[in-house]
Image (cartoon, rainbow, N blue to C red):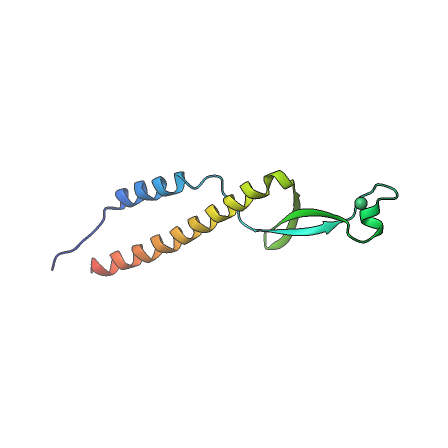
Amino acid sequence: MKIHRVPTDEQRKRFFRQIAKLWPVAKGSVAEVRKPCTRPGCKACAEGRKHPAFILGYKQAGKRRCLYVPADRVAALRKAIANGRRIEQLLSEYGAEMVKQARKQR
Ligand SMILES: [Zn+2]
C-alpha cells in the first residue's frame, strides 16, 4: 500500500503562506446601533432618532465586551473578522488532516 504523506514541514510552510494573506485579523461581530449624544437641545436625540454608531462585540476571558468603532474603520474591521473566520476554518482543516494522516500511517 502506497502512503501519501505530506511532510509536516511542508504543511507548516503552507499554513504560514495561507495566513500571511489574512492580515489584519479580528474576532467578534460588528453591529449598528443608535446612541444619544451630549449636545444640549439636539434635535435628533429629542426626536428619539439619536445617532448611528457601530459597536464591536467580542469576548475576553469568556465575558462579552463591546467597543465603539469609528465609522471609517467599519469596513476594515469587517474584513479583519472575515480573515479571522478563515483562519479558524483553516485550523479545523489542519486538525482533520493531522488525524487522517495519523490513520494512514498505521
Ligand atoms: Zn444627539
